[in-house]
Amino acid sequence: MTQALNKPGLLVLVGPTAVGKTKLSLRLAAEYGAEIISGDSMQVYRGMDIGTAKVTSEERELVPHHLIDIHDPDHPFSVAEFQERAREKIADIHAQGKLPFIVGGTGLYVESVCYEYQFSESGSDEHFREAQRLYAEEHGNEALLERLREVDPESAQRLHANDQRRIIRALEIFHLTGERLSEQLKVQKKQSPYELCIIGLTMDRALLYKRIEERIDLMIEQGLVDEVRRLQEHGYGRQHISMQGLGYKEILGYLEGAVPLEEAVLQLKQDTRRFAKRQLSWFRHMKDIEWVDVTDMENFSAHLEQIHAIIADKLKIERQFI
Image 1 (cartoon, rainbow, N blue to C red):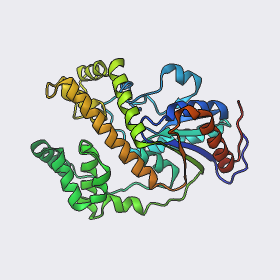
Image 2: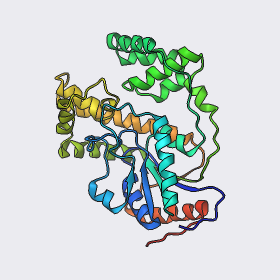
Image 3: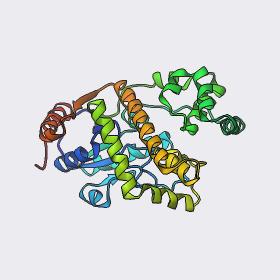
Image 4: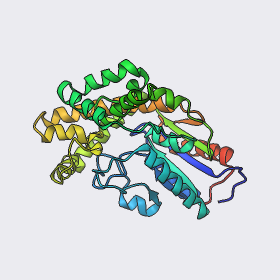
């Protein structure tokens, strides 16, 4: 890969769940000789394949993928760890003369690598955390989220009620520092150590929601319930961050006898639609994104050509393999 850039080049592909990132990323990686770094906070966990829409072993043989299957589901993976590991991989990939390519939909994780994010050294207060967990257990996750809404409405807006760990951390930061997490994020330096080419995929909302529902139906056919049951049998449950992820918490409700399967699947579809909406909201506040509308799914080649032009302009490179 030849470049005439002042900083190392970094290709990034973002967008909401089910928009078609995987198909495009495999094609682009093959054409540019790139290696993919997963920008997904859930694909780090072993044994969580169907619910995270993880690339298959065959796809990983076609293109090298990184930061997939690096932890067991009881590991509390954080954005700070992701940033550190991703930057190490970027350096390694560049050292091989290849193009690092982040692909994923976890906005904060991707943004933390793209820009000079410094994470708070505000420490922790285990007694405070436990008090919040007990409050949620007694009054429900919505009540815990309402607590955050009172002190940091912006953070509460972007977090789901079931994302208990991040809600408690946002409350803890305010408790320890008197500062809102949302304000801390705003003052982060938006300078990048890389020459960035960030491509965002978007599509008609109704079509995206249809694709989300079809993907979830396919996950159920592929054995999502059995996947969650196996994890449960290995001792992984709601106390683990991984099992609070989309697809896992809803199916756990069914396996625990709280709701019938049909209701759990409907809840998963609703939660995923809401998640996609939050993803789009996050990415639209990111700078440097070049948007590509992929609503016309039959026009894949035209979308590719549009992306090739963006990459050539931003990174000053051309396809190596066609």
